Image (cartoon, rainbow, N blue to C red; front, top):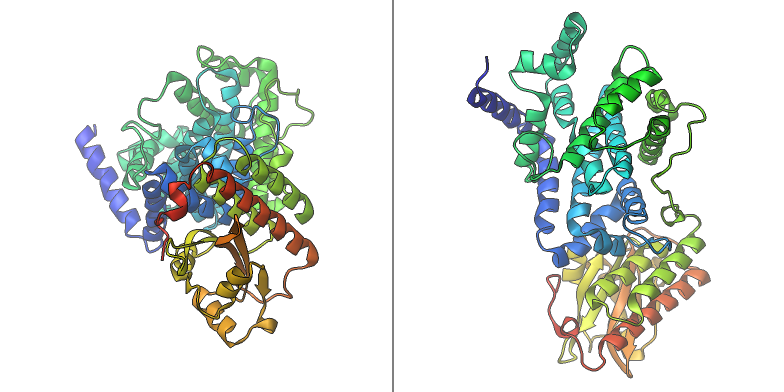
Length: 496
């Protein structure tokens, strides 16, 4: 009989071995960075936006969540990641980001591991969809708990393949569950290892598994039932009968009031969710045949489906630009708003709608002598903001654009010697500068760039940039009535 102290020692030894693996320190650093920056909600906004926009699967997940009935009651699609983070909250997006970092890391490692990650995401989707029949359980929280429910098995399968093979053999020989076989052979359960590794990454989980501190009975129920449904449908030797599924669900009737007629629709919808997710990550149909077990033909329509709004099907670049501009106008023009957040939405619209690799807001110092980077989005945004530091009396394209109050866009073919030095300083192959003019004074600029050579922006892109520029000027002008807010004259954490 293993004592709790012996079990904890064995688990910690495995955590130490995992952390010694050559590619794990980078993953650990990435997760800890997400946890760290999320401690300050205002400071985390642009960093989290960068992280989400850089990961297409995570972008889809965040937009799908924010456009669900639980968060978006207006019915108007939300396409801005920055606005989505504000509405969802940094904590929610942090949990999504950490789960996707783990997913992205392990699903690439081997076909066998990809199948385990598919099962983890199926459990996540089961748990999320089950919240339609519970009270006081957030769908996004259920999704993350479901996704991490199987983390311990993923860790053993990848980092200790010989042990995992023995566990699978023990399951078949003794006719027991994987969790029981793991405990017999390792001296601890999968959940023990998953929770210990999550705590090592700085994630707030309880001591008895991958659930947050203070977990409600409803959240525990949807996570466990989601996991059991995955096992019954995808891991059992034969498909479960309708009666067996009803009996399984009935065990959680006190917390989950899903009608028996909706079980097939829930399984079908979850499988469809996961198929779309892995397709967005580059998986081929052949790698996703496992999902056919849950995709039963003609399931009954769900009473409370997870919405799939137009807001995250991006469509054509023209359609995307129109949606982003409409959303930017909603956030920035009229009413009370946080100027920093509004300007981040402006930068995101410019970056994604251009599309450009990076976008930046530069502001002129109080003495009018220098323009500095204040906020930026895109790869190496912090380095860009630090390098964006130009005297206004210089003959650079940036200083000239502000002096003339005219936008400029320079490509490799139109660079002069000074322009080439600016491009090298900023790490750009081509760049554009749009002055921000308030009450006749150039108070700053919007900057955008691409890091590879192109033929330059077409007329439609230039028109789009002009609309973004006008909206930004309107937002800043509105914020200055009756007084200039602190953000305009205050050094940000990204100042040069």
